[in-house]
Image (cartoon, rainbow, N blue to C red):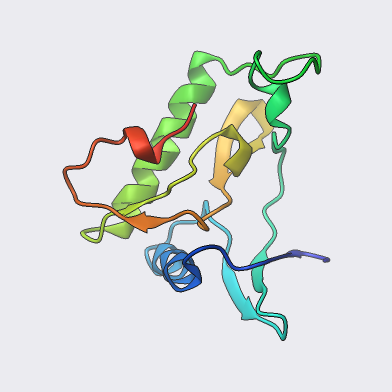
Length: 138
């Protein structure tokens, strides 16, 4: 709706909102800003311009017959992992797993740069020494 996104709350809306507020306070510009809620309990977030890959069938050869498949080169993969590192650094000591970090939740900018991460609805507290595997999907 205009320059905003309206979405239903996820499984832990309080944590998802807190993550976005913490990222904003830390100066992390690669996440949408939480702007509030409205009557139906939907979150209102700022819009992030760029390209997304929400059709998972275009990313996985084993899902559907859609062509062409989206593939990611080494530069794009490095950009995505740098973004994830900056996300965790911005959150500081309180480790919060993104929970659904994958191409479908990234906004890509010109030149194949991973510009932003869009979803925090699957965010969950995570012990600091947890393997990153559950936090990342490829």
